[in-house]
Length: 240
Image (cartoon, rainbow, N blue to C red; front, top):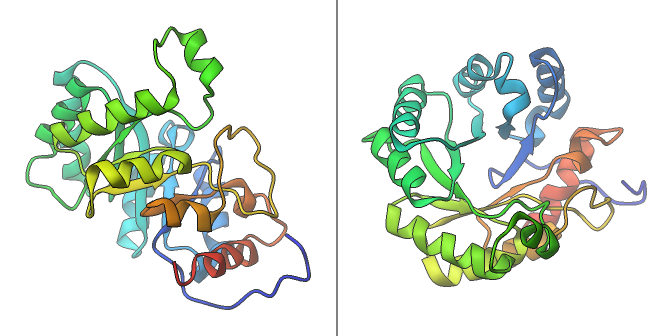
């Protein structure tokens, strides 16, 4: 982060989600401590899930934080339904991801039942994938067409929103209208590297396109001063 940039000490913006993609709960707790009041919403992915992710997620929520459980459920309908029911009953997260396939999404909604505090998001196309990657995987359509199909299927299945790159956020907002969650990974401020994100955008670009939440990891967690980096992103988001 450039030293010349002025950082305003502002409260956390609940639209900013910081991933805790770390090997242990101890590492994640240390990052939460360093970020302090700059971040209130955290993503827990598969790495932490494989160790103490569920217990950590519940503890974060008890401490007043919000949790994005990016666990991308993907199995036969019965298994997804039961898993979603168990996660909802545990009060472990505010957002839960599943793969945006109709049977999977419908099962997750059924499993969640009346626990509407937990929002279900369909993952459309990974932000690390390019058009060439989809061809290699055997898809007969490009990124835009596949994301559009999955957005429409998500709406039909009754999920609360989708996960898509910032470049598809405007399409999601146009199709789904207001009230539909659009969570965008691949958010990279101008001062940061894109890393493995093929379809990245700045915080301002993503919000203007229609995103409701931004997932921004390495520009924050990889910074010498994570709290200052997070507050700089919050400042970029201000007024949008």
